[in-house]
Image (cartoon, rainbow, N blue to C red):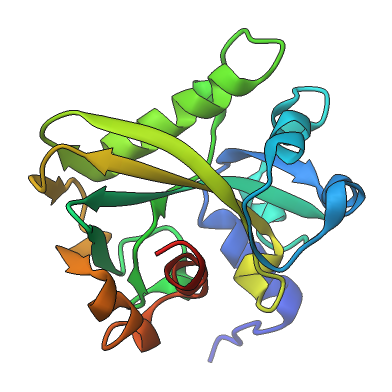
Length: 217
């Protein structure tokens, strides 16, 4: 019988293979600590964003390595979609890229910034915003116009997923609730009231979504 290697190094190698060489935008954990480490939501973020988006401070790194190395923070746009007092909510399906979040409820849509998003911009903002637009287009079909604003940063060092990610929280104010999922990873899509998000749905939310609901909604 063939012996299956279940050591941490073997499991880590398998996890790295899952991403097929994908490169993602990161900053060093050291930079984040120098800017001022925090837990949860931070809304006074102008100084953080200027430093984080500066091409002198960020770079693209192999995702397989980044997912297992807390000395780096992956930059993740985390977008909430709002219309008429309600917020888009969904359940993360098994086809999603982050297996540690499967079956959890979420109000945030987003993903990684990749080299395909890179733009010639000394401030780095164009690259980041191109990544935001691409991720939203890949995951949702939105009818009607919208306004997009950054409302905070999100950090959670209490678990393995949070230790290697830093969220940039956006709110998209939509003209219509006509929004559908563009991929299987976003299941049971529906607009929910703040009462339901803070009530019956709260216990099933992923950590980042709980922070957003508690602090922003």
